[in-house]
Length: 173
Image 1 (tube, helix red, strand yellow):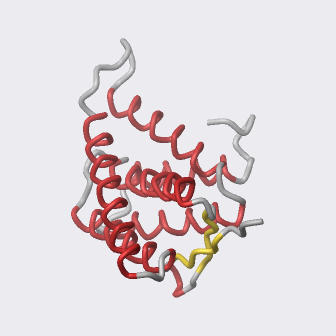
Image 2 (cartoon, rainbow, N blue to C red):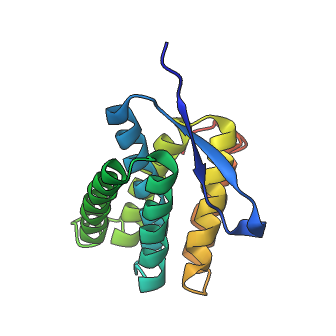
């Protein structure tokens, strides 16, 4: 039996290091990492602007994640390249969502936030509870990266926290 790898993810929140477990299957682990990148990037875009410092935080996260996951330098460099490409694709996708046409009566910001919220909830659900808490802490770092916690960011984070803890009505977004 193959054991799941435990990946130490650096957190600056209170100087606490936390663990997130990724699959031992490299393809599945890459999909999980891509989900985490989407989750973090969505929080950068939720206020309609992806600040440079938020982008830099995620780029640093990619390096830290790759260093924690892969000991071999050549394979680590390859993983960083893959994650960088995935991050750029996710960033383009999220930026483009703000320009998509919406249903009558639904504003673009509301539509985009709802789509992001659903996807982030799906990502959170795919991780065990302790990893979800770690991911929520990472979001706190993204929110603080630009020095301003926008009301949309705080509301989005609080809604996901309620959903994650199962205290949001029916438990669905």
